[in-house]
Every structure is written in structure tokens, then in C-alpha cells.
Image (tube, rainbow, N blue to C red):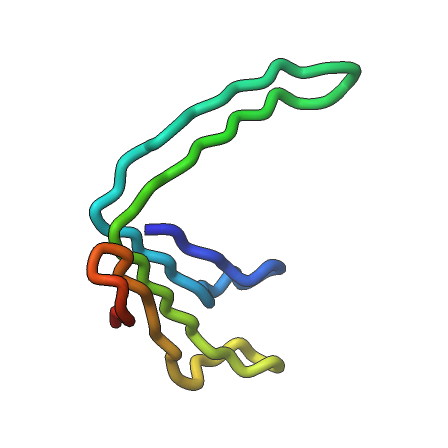
Length: 80
């Protein structure tokens, strides 16, 4: 599960991404060059993905409902 949080002082979560039937398909590492930081790329293959977007009020970040959806790659249909 991946979480995305609001930037700033009070870091409230506004997006959750859930993967199911997951495998790591590749990992690639690149060395640093001329002041850059090393870079690592990780790729995932998954059977199902779910998104949960948590709506927030702009002024105080209070929750104001969720929007959920997803896709089942195995059955090739909507998944929630």
C-alpha cells in the first residue's frame, strides 16, 4: 500500500493506492554522477489496483468524503 500525504505542517493523507497479486518485475540501480544522487528504479507487476482518494477541504484539511475505484487486470474489469 502506498500513501500520499498533503505537504506542509499537518500532513494529512489524501490518496491510498493498494496493489494485489504483486511481484517485483525488475530493479535497476544507477550510480551517481557529477553531484547527482544515486537512482534506483523498482518496477511492479500486479493483478489488481485500488485507489482511494480522500477529499479534503482546502482551508483546514478536514475530510469531506472518499472516492474509490480500481482495476482488476486478471479479470479485465472494474475493481472496487
